Length: 486
Ligand code: ADP
Ligand code: MG
Image 1 (cartoon, rainbow, N blue to C red):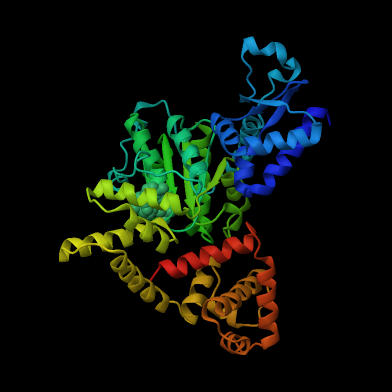
Image 2 (cartoon, helix red, strand yellow; image 1 turned 90 degrees about the vertical axis):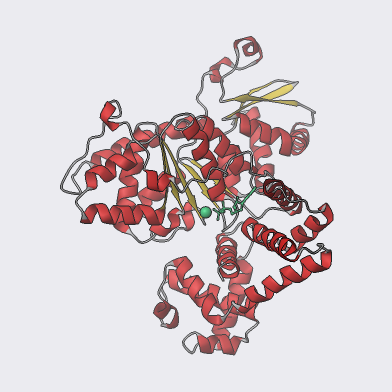
């Protein structure tokens, strides 16, 4: 390994410690050093977003680790996509100059894999074969009116407040809206409920539609029911035309295709067709592809082949900014100090935040009273007690089963399959953490298990509950559902 690679690897190692894995894989992994001299290190990055992000967020960390390794204060310069401008090339290694960025390479790799896969898929899986031709004018699509009616015109980038919890997703979404079907394909956005996934992808839809391109937006439920109807009504040709001849296809909440093999097959075929024609595909999900159970490996690898970004819970400043923005939209004036109280009280997600604000506005307008921090407190606490009550032993068990796609009987049974044991352990953990039930009590509720088994499970999950671990992700997602779905 040469010197510049060694230095850059050390820098990456430091950054990796400070950000989540999807963020690292998406933004940082595909960077590589192309030149080093005694003044500077030149680093190729795959997009201007990565460049801005490194500069804004990590510049001082990066400079520090370089100094630590080399003992020198080197200047770092970023070059987008490894393409170096002519007048800069004198200071840059020519051998690497035309090297493709890793991200482009990975797209190409995926494409060649896709061709192999296509060969396999050409074995007819159903009774007809469909040969779409994007150049034929009869294939120009009129977007499905019903589905696109679900795209809300007020879900735009302008109305989306950006903060550390969503800036990567936002940047990726913007980039896709500007250049659909090019670098970030597919775009996969994941995160808990009410964190702005639908808002973001519909912003892309609105932007792409305004460029005169065809867009199809569906939730995975709609995709499934459309598919069922088309199979039943023998109208698969028109189904395929609808889904495969658009410039942008968005499937929201894709996690619901878990365990549905036929649907997965159709998503896979649709994906390949669109991808092969450089058409953009976007998915959202409440969890990363790796955490979607019963998902075929080939579809998982398609999801993972593009850009994966997450949205997380917004921090205080972002929550305040969102509230302010909503007030402006509603043309309603509330004092900042009141917005601070709301933002402090409601931390779980943006939907709840909006709900609390709406409730307060409604109350004020109805009763024509003045808003005070006390009133805000009461209204929000009232909502919270209601939410708390809805958490029960049963709702925990149901939510965990639904999350993992596992039957309740299996949880109660002696079945020791890995997936089932894991779900059972998470239930035990949550019953203890959220409801403070005793270990013997929990054992009793879950098919008469010994209290030591429950204790062991609780300790194991607690131990695995590290930052960004799959266990933490599962537990957070489940809690999010538990507390949001009353
Ligand atoms: P998800 O699809 O992740 O469940 P949504 O996109 O439906 O979440 O968001 C829930 C609500 O919160 C929507 O009304 C949306 O406009 C709003 N929202 C979420 N994030 C933001 C944000 N960053 N800025 C402004 N509004 C937001
Ligand atoms: Mg949504």
